[in-house]
Image 1 (spheres, protein in one colour):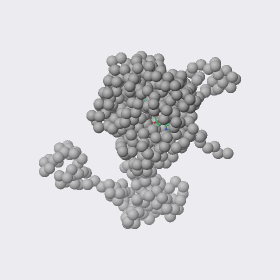
Image 2 (spheres, rainbow, N blue to C red):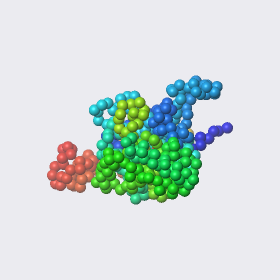
Image 3 (cartoon, helix red, strand yellow):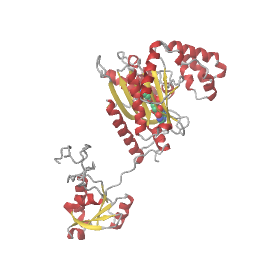
Image 4 (cartoon, protein in one colour):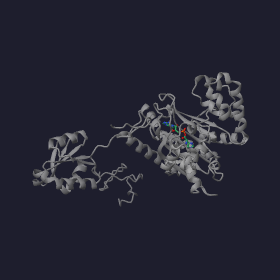
Length: 476
Ligand code: HAM
């Protein structure tokens, strides 16, 4: 009996897999000029990395972590001896990338004293046992960045700008998203604020859901995120963090906003933006799609976590970053008609007219691929007619037919599938002739518009050399 994929997971096949690869490429192009280098951390860690990093009272840790057991760990659990599991036997699939990246940064001392910040980006699967729905999966993909060791508010602004550039580079229309911004304060001002919110919840207990009432003691700020419409209205009246920030946090927040303003980055200040992970201090932000994604409208979010290193057993080191969800970004791209990668068509289909010429056809396929062409050929013993049908299906613009007649006439027959023109060309000329048919011939005219004939392809030096010798080094 065939088995289906687990609930809340997706197979990335064909264009979906191409889109994931494309998104990673775009991320790399956007993040590299900001000095970010890739990092890969394990898909599972000791559960404590997430429990301590993300916070015991968060939904992610309380309800959504997938536990991983080694065989010896499993044996203990199945014998009712779970309490005997050692820390390295209590493993969990990563629900996000920040806690693991910080664990790696501590373990490998990536931010030694006095060094420049470590700027890292990652792309990969994350796992949360949530109720699946549109834009919410149990295995989803994130692209994220972490900037470790920078306290300056310019770093916050830079990370936010980089996120917006990434969204823009994916073709998501700026008008279709909004950037929400808040400061969550720090150890100096947040405890008093938490107490004030807790007192507010207790004072309005009869108007709030059971979960929010429970949050009064465990994590009162999470009540701002309650999906219950009525709780949302009641929490509108709760004290605002913006009124409770200490002077240092206020100054930091003002500076972040000033940097964003100077760069013309539009944002909405949302004093109730608290995010679902406990490690944040000061700046938090989220990018939401304005229409079409329903309640799962956050395409990404992040913020500063200046205490996470210490929580994870490291030296005091500030950090900040963001992560964006691949699946939601794709929905946003589709909603605004952004181009998505399509399957690549071959340049040429090499058709074998007679099995006696199989070795010459095989050699031609390799020769054309070595010249950089995308080549398809039959590997199922099809008739010539059915090879042409398959070439059509592949949308190959040219079919190269090789058989006894073509070899006797001197080479291979190239058929332009658009015009139906055919000509036999020598085997060693096949690549050049194919380039001509595909319109890839080198132009003699200088691409810069100076009118010079360069004879070896368009000049792409970008210089203005109106009537002057070309400075591109091509000896013109
Ligand atoms: P997060 O807000 O939990 O932040 O997740 C970031 C993004 O991942 C979300 O905005 C959403 O697009 C996507 N996402 C989250 N859960 C799901 C899901 N179940 N299905 C589909 N997409 C989902 C973090 O993970 C932080 N680590 C971000 C960060 C990095 N903060 C600082 N550095």
